[in-house]
Image (cartoon, rainbow, N blue to C red; front, top):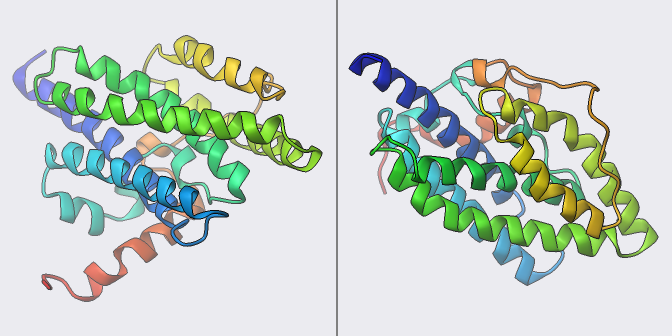
Length: 233
């Protein structure tokens, strides 16, 4: 590929990675002071900060990170649909985190050992953090799935609801078999049924076609910057 084509490919990939992490960070931050216990409140906040750190690194490869975060409209974002889904209950958030972190860990590992010397350091840093995110989500998936009848039911419903959105993660890569080998044992340990393949598979996020949820999320995230452009404090 030509140097220009290489730059374009890097920018597109960096936008996908950065937007996934940015929107995931915003969603997780919504749990601040709302989790069921203080320890989990801190844990989700720390995971949100990790995601935000990756977003800053990735978006800075494309342009000004603040402008990209706060001044783009929803059709310009390249995040997967999974991360923009509302938090729902705690089981829903955990299902989203399990599937996302399993994917992110694999993608960061591929970047860390890949040929792009601008993306490789991001992958090397982020894969360590995503491994913790995956462990955290896996522990809660098992705890809820193999807990009470109520927690099991909620966790199974969350897995069933989120699963269709996972197909989009693998449209441009061959990571799904490795991802399945990561998440399937977690579901099995949590006595949860793995949804069958072949059903509804929403897509479009990578092309800027999003659910209605992203617009509301961006309105909240961007309102201060847009209302007071250039403000400092």
